Image 1 (cartoon, rainbow, N blue to C red):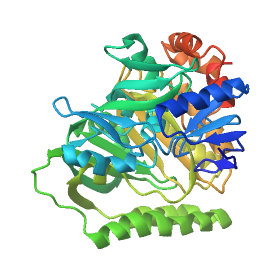
Image 2 (image 1 turned 45 degrees about the horizontal axis):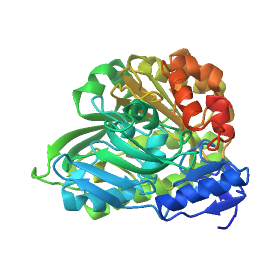
Image 3 (image 1 turned 30 degrees about the horizontal axis):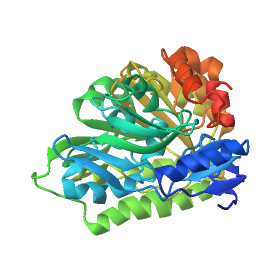
Image 4 (image 1 turned 90 degrees about the vertical axis):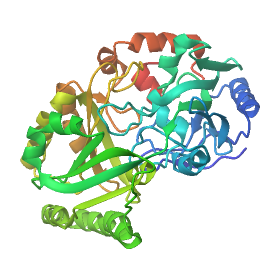
Length: 435
């Protein structure tokens, strides 16, 4: 065990834990929890630190799950794979390839661990596809009382819809069994289009293909659309060339964009013309590749993010309101707004619980103060029935969140049952769930 300063990826949260443990087995997780309780300390596991909130901040005992990785079991007949909780999403292509399997959907970042991504409600896009946690069919928790709890449709099934998006409040995830699908390809069509037209046709566009999303750079009138169609693995593959991928996804999206963000911070007046130039330089491109190569992109420029889940039909009005907000305040926003869609689900604390959902994410460069922009944008999101992503910045607490989730009280009851002494709590969970 050792202790040092921990910071999350966005550099907005930091803590010096009382101690750090690196368990290499479920039994060692149980032992670390017992030792923490004996010393009167709280316990929080960490993964990649990619949440923008303080959900993983551990002033007491920080459990680093880097030694709990890999495939633990495979049910080839049912396409189910049990993964150790600390397995990073970027490892899944290599881990699942021998079995011809893939996740049915992914977000656009794969730095997270499977436990962190699912616990915070991470999602991708696609009107018929739920977030990553909807793909969980079983999981194992190390609980506050020193036990190991199996949760599935066969074991403790009443806990499954609470634990799949558990916020780390119910116990420490040891493993997750995921319902995979046969590996597939995606045909990707990416092109700039007039923002007004995309918003006017939002519902049609969001449901016309398997996976649709778009980006909008403030100070422009253009949406950068991405339409992905699922294809079998034996369909003709037409990947991007090595140079084209480097130019678009490495140099333009990371190296050059990093310089642009620094320039925009130093000289804010340059941001609008730079954004207009950026959207004009965006190439039309069409390619077909394995799903993971299309879903995910490299993100090296640090930022802060707020994302809200909205009733899908509210998305156009929210984008128009954000445009007015930015213009009226004379802000210079270099980072784009990201818009996606997802299917409804039954998970108690899923942001898509019970409704067709659209997601709107706003960002600021990590060296810029995001709070004024985010606080006023949040007023728009909340006025349109929004729910904040659990792993991204927001300013709500239990009193305002509870009315937006029909099963919020049921989740709290499960928390009271599994962690009555709040061994797994921290300041963030005290705020959003209540102490």
